[in-house]
Each structure stands twice: as structure tokens, then as C-alpha cells.
Length: 488
Image 1: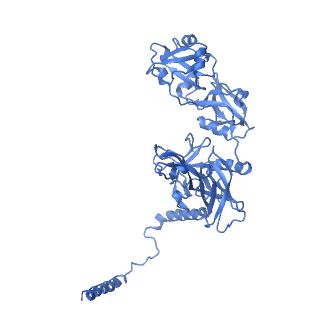
Image 2 (image 1 turned 120 degrees about the vertical axis):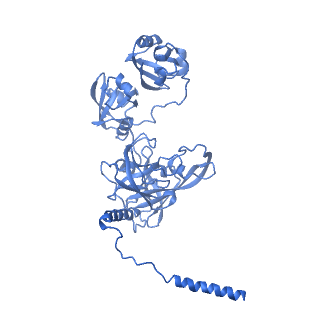
Image 3 (image 1 turned 180 degrees about the vertical axis):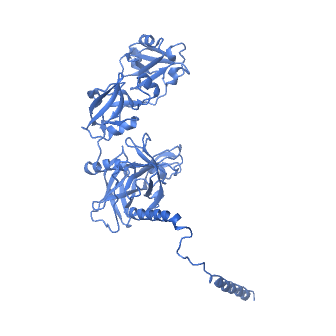
């Protein structure tokens, strides 16, 4: 009886449930619940974004690579490190062990007939194998046509010339010279392997330089979500054209933090054809060392506070700059009539020039502006080496001018320090909280000029510094040269 009763109850529940599901929600009238004037703009915007997504998705490429990578402390590859570099404020995660691993990045078709795909250099760098999955679901082997580490741009090609192009489209890289802050953009790619994902945002800033992401180029900053796997995917404007290549994020945790960066389209248009035609990009070079132009240095150089530029701290012998007449202590103000606001402006202008190009530079020397023509050379190496070796800067030199104790650069000191300079005054001590300490001078620095006068001995420096209210020093440190302004 118990079984029969249980069965009866169960059947009853089914009957009751059936009566409940006979009810349906009220029908959708198809009309907007709010005033059309309030929603028409949003509907058009939504439809536009959907159309951009539909078009862009057909051009996407998902790039699988295998290469030897460093494993994290857990024994598994950190996906953020794989495509965005090691560390990012997370010390202690990496072990010195290598293992072949697979990673996924993104790219997009720019020439469907030739099978050309744009991506980031760091996606395909040192890859042993490359496979490209296209939007129609077909996967083909790929090869690198050219890549440039200095700008993080690469071009890959589908190896099979007869690959299935069904349902695919190509994207146009914008030729617009500028992108305004506040413009709407979408970022597409495969974050964490989630193919054809779209994120939406705005252009937060443009011209972001000195980010230590690449040697050359400024970046677009966006709040559109960019995560590992988005690397190499397109950043698309509201006309459906590519305005940048998603490259990196700013994050201490490795997760999206509202700040992403993309290589701008203008740079992509300059670099990609060279990679296709030549396989590499030759970097321009004139052979100078630069340093920021501070207000103190401007005052010491009799340069107006509103002027911007970069100070030449060193000119390499027999370099294009040396041959053109550029000297240490010159302030470079303009290049090809474009104002230089910082070192990055000049680095990009010269580095992205072709060897053999002539550039016009306006400089400041001895209280006057002077135009000069420089023939750009080919970059020979990685530039002037710098040492991160710390020195003791706390040894007091009380009573010394500007808090600096100095001694003549003798042959014994030359053997110890191995400087380029033949003569000068070596900093033997820096008084704490003195003008010299605040300016960052260290023991072992060599003063080779003071207020435009050559320094051959400690006495030379003391004579010039005694009674002076301001000093403009040229120093050598670990083979590099710089200017330092001191004020009592």
C-alpha cells in the first residue's frame, strides 16, 4: 500500500505541474516600454556595434604557438607572462625551468587574397610552430613574414595559398592621422582562449610614451577590456576600421584593471609594409644620449620655462649627430618643425626614420636657436650601456661647495673607474641634504665641465664653484654623460 500511495502522490504532482505550465506570460507587443525619443539613439548605437562585431569577427585569426617558456612556481605556465612578459609586480612566481608550452594570441586578416595577418611580435616571437584558426573554423599552419620587436608588430601568413576563404573578410587599417580622446572603440580577440570576444570602451588617452613596452612608438590607452589572449587583436573604431593593435595592459595582478594599450594604426601602416617587403625594419639612429629638460636645467641654460625639448648629454664620436655639428649641452627643440616635448618624441622621430633620411633639427645653443640638418644612420646596437651599480652617496664632505668633496682624476683613479674622460674632478663625498645630494650626485661621478668651463682638476672645480650661486655640471657616470644643475 505504501508503494501505491507514493505512486498516486507522484502522479498527482505531475497533474498539478501540468496545470501550472498551462499559464504563459503576457505577450510581447513588440513596442518599446519607454518613449521612442529616449531609446532610438541607443538602439542605433547598439545596432551599429552589432554590425561592427559581425564584420570584425569574420576577419579574426586565433594564433596558436608552441615554444620554450619559463614555468611559474606552480609548475604551470602563467598565461599573462606568456604574452605580456614576466613579473608585472608579482615577484617569486617564476622558476628557472623550461618546458615547451602552447599559447594563444590573436590577429586579424588585412589581405584575404594573400593570407596576410597582423599580430604582435610577442605573440609569435621565438615560436617553434604556428597554427592559425580562422573565423570559418578552419585551421592552417602559418609562418612569420616579418616581425619588429621595437614596435611589437608582426605579420604572419597562412602557408596554404589555397586555404578555404569561405565566410572570411579582411579589415582596413585606418589612415586617419589622429584619434580623439573619448572616441568609442571595441577590442576583439581571444582573451583566455575565449574566441571572438568583444569588449567595448573609449579612447582614454593617446600618445602614451615611455611605457617600457617597446623601444619605439607611442600607444593608445583604452578602457576596453584587454586580457591575455587579446594580444594582436584589432582595436576597432566606429567606422569599422582598425585604429590599433591590442598589445598590453597595466596591471599589478595580471588581470584587467581598466587600462589597456594598443599600437596606433599610423605606426602599423608604417611598419607592416616593411615587414612584408623586407622581413625586418631598420631603425634610424643619430648617436646621442639625452636627458629630461628640468626647470633647473632650463634656468642654467638661459632657456625659457615654457620651452620644451631634450638636453644632449652625450654625442658619440663619428656618429651622424657628431658629423652634423650637434654638441653636448645643446637642447633639441624641434625635429622637422614638430615640437619635442620629451625624449620619446625624438626617439620615435629618429628611430622610425629610414637610414639615409635627412631631418631638420632646431636646437638651442649659447642663448640662441639654430637649425641643423642631420642625415639619419642605421642603428648599430643597443645604445650606450648603463650600470645600475649603487654607490655610497652618504659620505659627508662638510663645508665643501654645494656639498661636494672632490679630488683630481689621477692615473690610479682612472685605472679604478675606467672612465672615458681623460681628466676631471672625481666626487669623493656628498654631504647629506646638500644641493649635490638633492641633485643625485654620487661618489665616483666625474665632473668634466662646470658652467661651460672644462674641469681638469679638483682645484679647477673649487675655483669655479667658490662663491657661485648656481652650477651647471657635466658629469660622467659609468661611461654615460649627463648634465646636472645645482643651486644654493
